[in-house]
Image: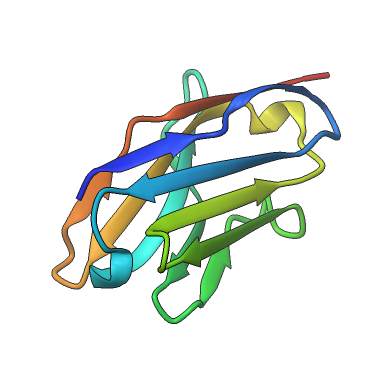
Length: 115
């Protein structure tokens, strides 16, 4: 499975962005799909994940502002980001994990939030 993330860009604080992650194959074999981010000088961290059954989990720092969703018919996962803050600035990576525990990563998309 290859993952292609898109939707990043430069926005101002308080703005919204929607990231998309398109998979080259069916994501029905992917138990968990999610978004991670890595800010300059920091480790990669989990942002949000969604299971095949639709259960979600979010980092505390984005709860109430970000929403993750998946469209299995389009083999795509989305991350709706509202009320963006400068501290959300990072490269965002799409991830998928199959039932065997194998991780797949896409190339990141840069999100820059100016104050």
